[in-house]
Length: 412
Image (tube, rainbow, N blue to C red; front, side):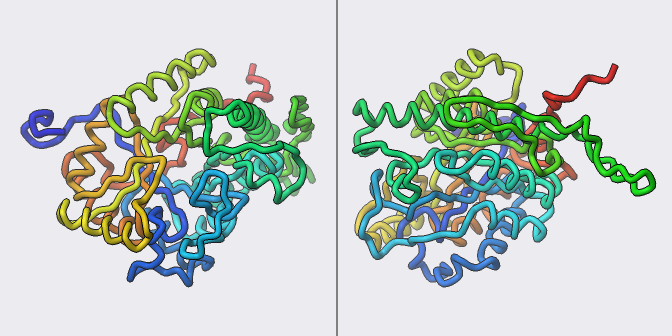
């Protein structure tokens, strides 16, 4: 954005609020992050490390954090694993991290990653519902399809030779189609289970001895190719009714999944024109799915590395790349610059129809601190970001209404 796009007071006078999320993964998204002076590689499996990161994000009034997870060690190649010994390997369970952090925070949304390929939707549904209860309405779910390398850890599927190194091969395309189809059913089951208890199913009347109203618990009776789930859930309906569901999408099939089942779609454009094209495709899929009246956020992912000057940021990036032995490779744009330059980019791209951003700090805690201490004040100065939290749930902060329960009979 240039100054000519701004009104005299420097505020872009945006019609909609800018939403900001950060994606937390290990010591940061640069492979050499764990070797930086302020990194805490010996604490990556400690609760205090994750609590500190999330509380820092909350101090910056961010909408939410996501926590990465997978069912295989972190790879540097699409088909991993690899034999690299100079990278962070191993992680904690994302849902359990979020549950540990929930009582230590008050406002920020907590969206752990859960895979849809080898887990059961019943288990994930009750875990996220539990997180929503203990966080008082701040839970969400990032649904993620597994990579082929994860299959061997479970032994339930025979896929043959499938490589994602060349996503254009028939085998790779068939893999993607099948697994994203499964993910769509998975999310449908999860959402039905969240509705299997009506909001007022719990009576808890000690005088009459009635704890629940059995007529307000419902079977979901889902029958599909991958799942046959009867229900009801064992966890009462989450405070948000439906915790927000997010997916990361890079092409048409994942865009379609996001348009049909998600509340937030994370995408990875490289410039404003690509962002505009992606948003248009998701909106078209949303309309085709009959969800044109629903709010579906599209957040752009960026790896961010910040410094006081653009030159200093480039020098940081060059030093990290040299230490890693190669330039960082990412599905998302790698931004190295100042907070003001990043604010310019975010506000310019927002005009492509994006409703928010998920920033991936290159180094933790350094770049998270910079997001909170430099970027947020810069956006606030421009009138583009909140200056306080309200007493809202994650859904309401994202502008999502409390959803009706599909099984409840409307009051006559």
